Length: 251
Image 1 (tube, helix red, strand yellow):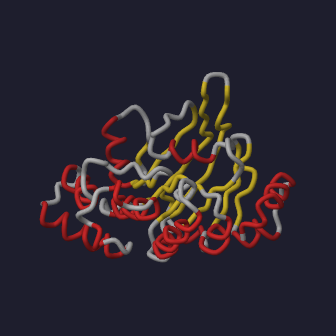
Image 2: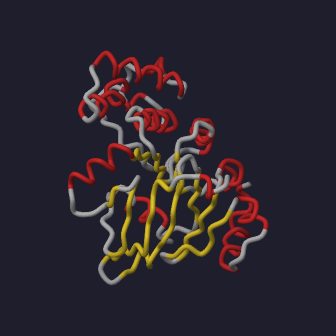
């Protein structure tokens, strides 16, 4: 994928984030492009999830600038609402509403935020649930589904808002091993639809096979930013080489 031909959709410049005296992000800069699939990898505590969460202001950055589709993320609530309408997020622990059935979980935001009618929202929700293989589970509640099924519902819920960008924060890390693949299959299919995806993941096979780009975080900084072939076969930084040696069994 040639970045020169793509339109920037997210631009982060010198982003900083502090938790007390701890600096979680140290002047992080990166540009993400429309239709690009980016895998964000690194050891636990390296700042990758914190960075992802700053991109829709679930974590407020302390320095630098972030803009999404030309809208700067700042104290302006109008800007924040505009960005969150265009950026979907899939969390590690699903975050479904336990008191609502699956269909209502998927239709709620389009009806409340986009102003869709119940008929429109339900038709779209059922189509999305069919896409992730769960149309027959629409009347059930989250507690009645497996972890893998709940995560697929969460993906359908995010897609129901027609986002320009989808953020995935370690979407398979809370799943039992046998459920991981069913979620990765859906994500692989999504990656070929032209939607912009940023995926914080420990799934090196996914990063290698599906991503257009791999970013490696360590101690709050981006140490490597490359195409998968270059990242996995010709890393430039010795810390990247050491990380890959530790996780090599994963792909």
